[in-house]
Length: 462
Image (tube, rainbow, N blue to C red):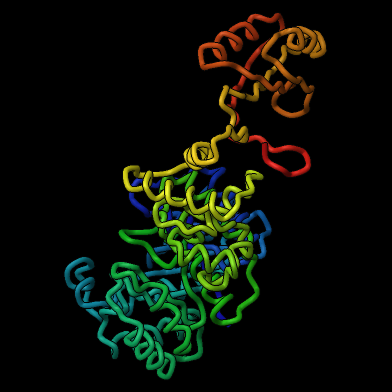
């Protein structure tokens, strides 16, 4: 059964303009462990002191995942990994003629000696060792077999086949891994597939089918250049297409969102699984089908990963989608009214980039000839208030209750002490009220949030 090594903390941090802070790395490791990945590649300790500290702290968390430290084939790199307390060291050294001749200036024989000596040293320190022949997909196959078997004989129990510049196609990956599996000594085979042609996950799945054991991923597909397979896509592909049920699906959305926030690496809306549009439907044919039976246009239930489907209303929209959206606001229509509203939406949609719920309500009001009070026309706001520690909260509450625009007041727990609901005629009225509240003795801080939509307690919108 497939294994997953996640390299967000190593390959992912090599994404251009991405840098994780120590606390963020620890949280990423916790979230990865909660998903259930078998291995977490925590970084290369030779890169910086921060990375060394991060690996040490992650290794001390007693996570279920095996903690892997990355290292060049050098003693000082391996020593750093040992000091960090990692479970395994992943030693890499390039094997293609391009790298040996142009970058490393080493012969094949010299490379073999460097690789085997580094692995023997790591084993002598008590490490489990993975060896990565960097640029394996462009390495002469006979030499690849030779160097991998030498690494295994030196003590490595895993070989990571690296398609370093993402040049393989799935049929090539299948053939190469099948041949490699037949000629290597007993070991596990990892797959490190880059996504330069958008084939990384397809290549990795082909490699697993050919006999490999483990796919390397990153959250949101981060990494050098165009990255490597995305964790969420990999997990969902194996869960839904291959029947692999050992990972926590609902953790995928959380960790994807956390990485967006901490990395500044934002997802394309059309990204599979975690992208904004992954469960969003627009055309009349699609929305009609998905509202009748979601399976018509969804390959899996978004609830599996804690997401919801969304119906976009614009000129492409059919009657069923419009009726469903207005029903969310408690607006019931007869067939004639619905027909007229859809017709007007299409007319407006021909001249507008986007239509929002407020626009749809406005169109419905125009067609029906009545006001529909579901979206506030005046400004409604929630105002959170912090009170100085030496002042009684109830004293501030009494002052708030006497203000004309404050409709309700609550004493609450948490960061703020008081929450109040405010109705104002316009932004100037709201601003004046907030300024007045700030002058109340004991008020330390306020936080204002505008209300976009109100719901009644029984679930009906108003």
